[in-house]
Image (cartoon, rainbow, N blue to C red):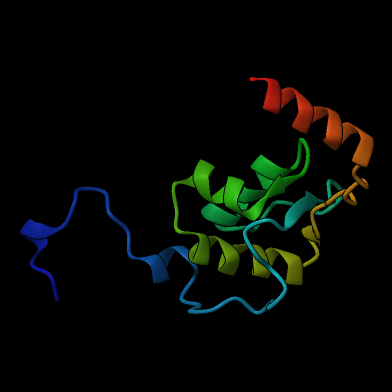
Length: 119
């Protein structure tokens, strides 16, 4: 164990923040997963960190990595907190929207190539 004189002031162990849970109960959560809060769910009774996650997500969708950045916590710990909120129905996870790649135009690419050759 690290002597107390070597610990940073205000430092909290990760397992304390996650309520003692070591891993997320949801395998599908990743850093890009979007989180949508259910405004109808009561916030009373939530611990401090889950409450902060809900406060962040209620105005609109945020990704897991954005929530981790706002909370200044490791992504793995935020995934544990978020998984608990998903299990309780407070949050709904959504895969990020990735638009389909548009087909390239060979005419356009030839114009770019010719322009580059003129340089």
